Length: 173
Image (cartoon, helix red, strand yellow):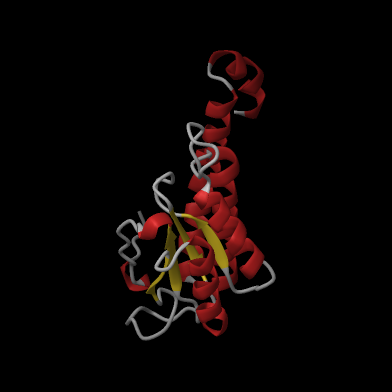
């Protein structure tokens, strides 16, 4: 793809190229994330989740719409998550789902979970931040990998449906 960019810029434009770069990289990241979960390598999984989120923001560009650039609740939520969790090794945050609808996911250590939820709700509105599941460990019945609950954060309290998959159900395909 890289060597074809000059010609592609003339025919499809820069945004289409950036989105293609995201999809190519994301296919590789998904396989690596699956392998990290299967081998219970939490650090690798979280780093890949961060990389995926950064790619979504920069290349896929699905965090805000160009129709309403003054409304960037997801960008703000991601920035706040980065401020709160950025110095924490065992955490990650990213846009979740198709974007634009207003949902991020964050993997937040239990010891700062209450402060994280309270801080996000204070800025984005009461009820914007929900602890969805202890996907990577805890009392939810999933195979423990780490002490990190999954937090869904949505504008106006909107959360898309999220069905966590226990590690034992991961398929090779």
